[in-house]
Amino acid sequence: MDTVDVVVIGAGLAGLSAARDLLKEGVDVVVLEARDRVGGRTFTVTEADGVVVEHGGQWVGPTQDRALALIEEFGLGTFTQFSDGANLQYSQGKHLEYHGAIPTGDPLQAADLVDAMVELTTKAMEIDPECPWEHPLAVLLDSMTVETWISSQPYCESAKDWIRTLCRALFPAEPGEISLLHALFYFRSGGGVEKMIGTINSAQESRITQGAQMLSKKLAEIVGDRLILEAPVIRIDHDSHGATIHHDKGTISAKRVIVAIPLVLAGRIRYSPPMSGVRDQLTQRSFMGSVLKVHVVYEKPFWRNKGLSGHVTSDCGMVQITFDQCHPDRPEGVIVGFMDSHLGRVATQMTFEERRDVVIEDLVRLLGEEARNPKAYYEKAWIDEEFSRGAYVGMMTPGTWSTLGPHLREPVGVIHWAGTETAKIWNGYMDGAIRSGEDAAQSVLSSLAAEGVLK
Amino acid sequence: MSQEQEKVSAEELETALREYVDRANVSPRARKTLLSWTCRIHIQANDIEDAAFTYVVEKGESQPISVGLIGVPDLIVRGQSFDLAEIFWGDANPVSNYMQGAIKTQGRAEDVMRLDAMAMFIFLNQ
Image 1 (cartoon, each protein chain N blue to C red):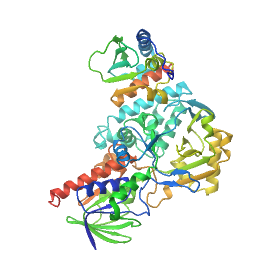
Image 2: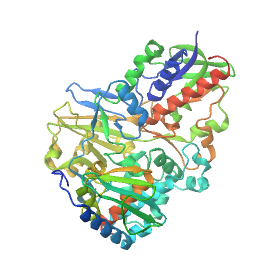
Image 3: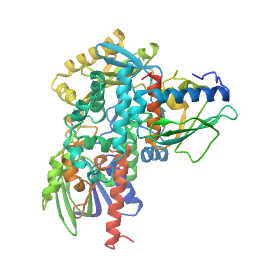
């Protein structure tokens, strides 16, 4: 049986970032990855027709400093998300054009939305992302769902519907599934609602030219042969001296373990001795977002000729959010669409052909008849992925942050936790994943140093 | 927009800013939503001389504009004179992709957001 200093479980951005930092300090590391690839919830595929498909996370923006630093360090390029022309809001059967993050086609609705942005961001900035449970109103905010909050506001119905669509797109979860405390924590971690929903100067500002998964591939090159693919972890035996990790390809002993996978999946590993009741209750109350992401490919980006940016929000249909997904090195026009939250779950119960047909019908309604005959259609149902069970991010049910939150990041003996769900900044984003991995590596280094294992 | 780098004079910009303050103070949405907001803002046009102003919002109420940069700002706003004037005239969407790129702000995200909100309410005539 191999013995190393640290085993990292999960070769997404969190796990690989942790491994890299440990290797830098001369720590002997092995990374175990369940899939046959690295990248976790980033997954870039160049299809046979040359189309670059970003099945997973794809955007970076200002203040996502760790992701931007890695991009620079690895010599990767970025390009600006196309946002020229008008965005479209499809609301109550009408197409309303607007520019920027907030739809302005209906002034009353727009004023309500501005009000909501201010209200939510102001509340969010009162949350300490290190410890949301310590907010004086944490229990109250955590007992209230986002839907409760929306319903109680004096906004017009179309504004409320747009906020619901926004919620499904951002988390992606139904407004009735998450607590207001979780939403506020999430907004706080991303610097405010406006920064999270826009393109210019915002979270959707840029994409990585070589694809988002390239960050993980570059990190994996550093880890080299210390990475073992197709090795899902079954059981972790642990005591105060170290752990023995049982996986599909064998067994490894380590002084420390970093579990860098979503809480839901971390809860499916068998631990001996078992996790404490409170830690297990936490993982029981975590759930992954539901999303089915589609790429629809056309000869040309026809919407641009109509003065449209390709970014659409809709209050009906299966696809309620789209963006222009063209790649600067490619001639074809690509629209990326999201079937979020419950719509994503409904979509996975359709056949591939049924899904493709409803997606195309939605795009025809939103962008015009030119959307009728795409060259190609690609999709990824993240909820069907055995080693993600959803995307973009894991969340907690109402009442969980305020009662079990302190157990989210707290190491359990020699076992440390990482993953974007544990991030304090840009939680749920690629940047948050990197930060969480780096934080976990520091935590492990400190504990090894305290034991005298490291100088 | 200022694709051809149109300019307005410092006097025109000051007038636009004073009118903006008047509109902000009679905007029911701005007064209600920004009721608790206090902020000292320095505004500078970077393409014309002597176009620097201090704009103070005290508990949601906009105070008369001062010429020059006075006191320590909570927020600094810089841009081309025409882009700034377009926002103060209420002619341009302050959160449009163009303006988000053209106007540079320096300060806390919450203050930027509130200034955007105030300008949006005026743009929307709300």
